[in-house]
Length: 446
View 1 (cartoon, one colour):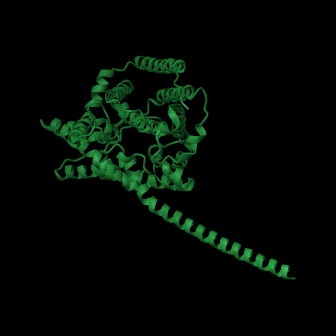
View 2: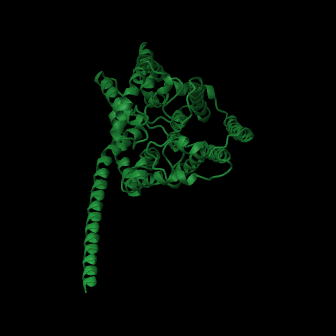
View 3: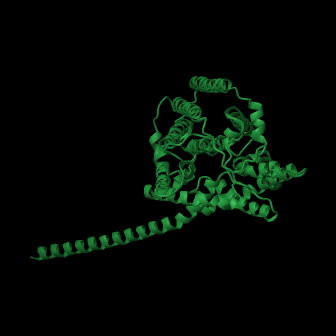
């Protein structure tokens, strides 16, 4: 488990700080070499409609994208410090997910109204905002609503006010909605806010269309930063493993326990500590990136978001034993269809939100869940017009809710059959025992 004694913690801090500085300096050097205008890029990102799929690497360049991502990360991390929020597996998952979606869909401005809505909800319900912080950070999945209303082509004087008001309303109702929606899939979809966002997004999109607010989906995807992103990702994932190794008393001891976990409502930080959790996150980063490379896809903003989301939720439910069957299922589904490689890769990465199905019901059901997920996710985006960034979370919620009663029915049937078999076996055993007693009595009489 974690070793945080005074001497060891200083060593961990030194190693962590050194690795982070090396990665940042290397990245800054790359941006300078590319001669990017970061400020112009960040302005383009902030004022761009963010409907799916808008890769910010194309809109603003790699320097501006990472600046946007770090601003959002610093904003969320600062809130956790000010509110004294305990760093759990779910909090880490929210950090990495929101950071990942900063590469397509979220920017430092279009997420703010959701936090304002969350604050208003906490005041209305007389609860501490820190109790709903994670839910609100995930609710920024609908950030494109804000950007679309504020910066669409026919922007009016009231567009900015309308955009902020819409974001606040969504942030206000996200918490009670997410609580209700969680029971729909019973926790087997790790991206509950994606499912909530899909339902809410469908309703809001329908209202907007009723008043002739037309939403045009986009498909802007970068291809020029593949090598740079692979180097950055590999460095971060290796750093996570190294830091986790030292936190875990300079060993990998205990990691096999994580692999035995079903992943259903499982906070790895609380159960196994930061050290093993970081190791798992680093390993899963390489697994996710490796999958993209194996199927021959180029890394870009959306796929990077998928990889980072996998890494984040490797602190809350995911490990390679319960995610690989999902990846295989999605890949198999793609083989018999006209689906392009990018869609397969993106659906597979985000489809790992169904990992608990593998953990609880087994590998075969994990493959089936992945296969069904690809079929559903390709059509479900039209419901919310591409304005829910967690479209795969929406799809996964539907897949889980369909499969759960079927899996439970089969499992119950097997259990009943096994009970019947054991009863018959017991009856046979009792009959044989009774016959033996009779034979013994006869022999004794003789």
